[in-house]
Image (cartoon, rainbow, N blue to C red; front, side, top):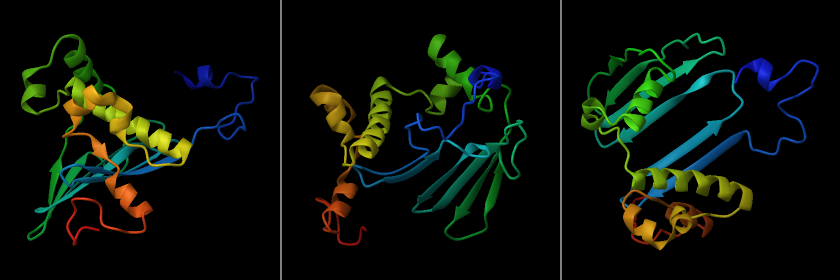
Length: 195
């Protein structure tokens, strides 16, 4: 929607009006059944749009960053992936931008959804199953409910028994959050070194 449509002339609308009751920032810590954890933060009011993604693993770290100012100007050092191995030199991987919304992702996603997945999307593992989609929606809903209800919400509880069986391998668990809430006892099934 255009700015003029969202904020019509003669109507005083303000981002911080009392009527606006959604949070500006959400943060979540998700723990998956096989030990992977995810720390996620989103800010809805920011001077730039984009994301920073960091993946830490046993062989090092991958970091990517993309962002644009409100006028569409890319931020400096955006559109790259940095590989930081545990041992050795960092490597910078340039990522070419494609035409279309979200740096070319929107046209590709629409094609995959409405025409059918391309061989490229399949080869790169970019096609999500309905179970993966359900798990993603349940995780997001669990974060929102946890904030509004001030309690830990299990994504599995939002899906029902049939879906929970289907997505059990990919569904986040709040074991870590429960562990923190119980006064730092180790979560069930964890080893002594995991904190």
